[in-house]
Length: 216
Image (cartoon, rainbow, N blue to C red):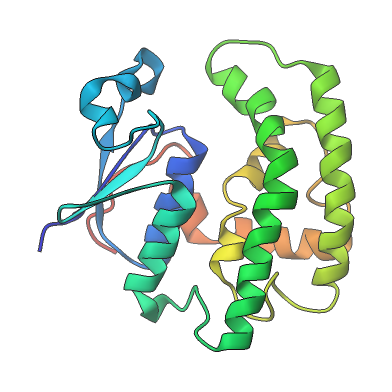
């Protein structure tokens, strides 16, 4: 069987998210760089695979899939032994609730924040402090709810790690390192959960950029 190929930009957070889940599931993969800085992701060859001109996408023995969270769900479902998606109906519902909360609450504020402190930096641009202040305040309010949830359980969907937790990587550590804020560690239960996530080998494996992992 052909090895899975991950097409993306090595410093892309969405590419990093997929690589983290591949690592968690112990799936060997070949990283195929896409020169996003020079617009390769907008050219016909890439658009044929990813019609929105974004990254990443995967080629799993001829099966093409894009959107980082969809890719992660596919990986977890195909490699069910990693136990990143619960199969019990109630536990699965709690997982879906947590995964939806990540998109609707965390990502909604963190995405723009990441662009200011990470995306612009990688393009040689200066962050807008006024935008940073607004997004930090918005995310801080969302993390109040996270703190309440995590006061009752170890992870967002219960006491077992799921994709809903991993979806927060790599945005959460980038915020801590680049936004000059203690946002991810100022609330005790969020801090405990966050420190658990960032200690995982799957995150640390790609801190310097996504690369191929052919064996574990």
